[in-house]
Image (cartoon, rainbow, N blue to C red; front, side, top):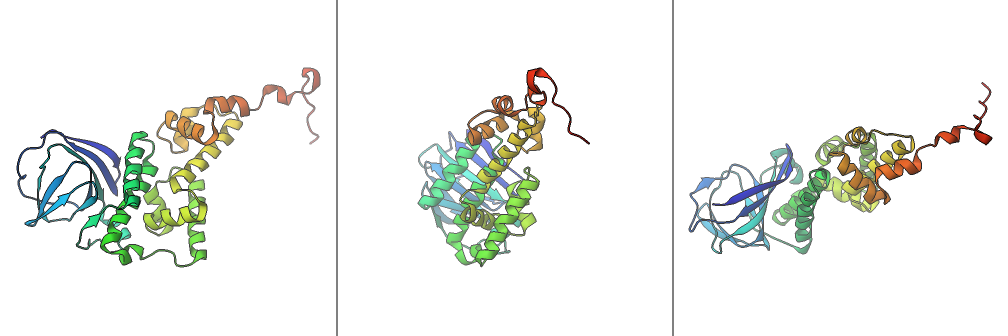
Length: 288
């Protein structure tokens, strides 16, 4: 069939895959039961779905909701197509639907905001394996927007009701990320006792930045502090701060500060001469 799959995000609670059907067969595929809940967003082409005997069209302006256990078949009437497949775990799905993982029936159509989130998710994959946090944030926002079309009330359940509660949630996220910059989005939300969707929305409203961007700012600030102290093991520093590798840290630090870590170390690290007095003599020690 010429199907190629590229993982955008692979996590215990969330899997996102870029799928290309380069040479689909004519006619309908054999019936099969859906093994997972998933959202399918067509990016190019048209796919026909037959779900429990009822046909529907999947195009770039709609979202196909794959429900666990439903019998489904697919056809590709116009040849090759490409789509993004988003599969959350049952606990994550429940957190997005007010605690109940049962998905309401209905059709979902793409809004301009959802189309942008979809493209941001695809763009995150293009930045390499390091931007897992950003990809997860975009994927959760996209899933929540799609599910809100099916039951907006359940998706809204659990959102902090007061300004003080929203501020506490944002402050808690900032504190947790400062304490451990390696935290991912889903573990962070679990630690704070809320859905990742609500956490992301509340945090952006409170700070003006996405969680992913703010986390990068914190990690870049800590990297600057270590570089100013003369840190020379950039690979070890990258691992300590939760970057995928040294190249990922270099990309983020350059984006936040305008200079790569090696150059920053040369500018910020204390000079050996700074510990000497005039004419090259060592400065006298302070009295004990």
